[in-house]
Image (cartoon, rainbow, N blue to C red):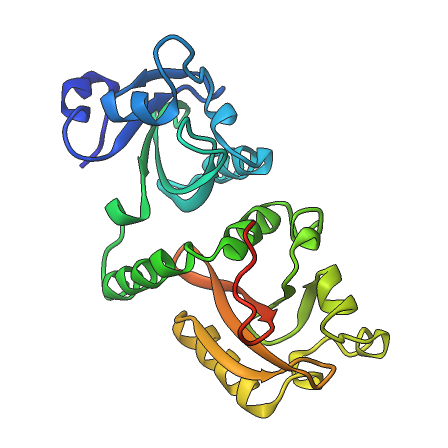
Length: 263
């Protein structure tokens, strides 16, 4: 059902935080839940761009709407009044005039527990629901939240290089496109591996098979294996999902029994 600023009373219903935003980013309406999420009346966020932990998230949404997307639906890291950053799902409905110009955007913010899938039809609907269920578990992994920020910045390395875990980002085919500092210094990804940027050159057959399953099913996996040094490691394999498809696969290396770092 399309939403509009003419039906603002209806927007007050339900568990979701809803804002109406002009194409320039100015927030012109927020319901009660959005007010609690984005700031008190005494000092509210005035622009959608101010809400994101990563500036590139704002650029990405603008680009997709300018490209003609009728619904933009993806996880973002949000600057909330409750914490420095928290992950939310943002669904944006651009409302267009008869000439095709965008008049305003209706933005629906929801936490992973209140995830709403709208605008999705057909046989993929069940699969998308499964993606959401598993992504809900993944976002509890602090390293994964950091990876989301890095992915929005095309893996510049400034975020994930600070992680103590070894981290590799690859395409769904296994071609490595990024490795962080810990992966090279502590987990044995040698300079000789750089000319052969594929996971099969430094991971066991069992881990590569688990990787293939994650790339195919979008369900996370965890293997006890070895790092490129041959030292035992816990290897978490996480899909990065965009628009219902696995875009990249992330491998997070840590030592057995070492626990997760507090980030």
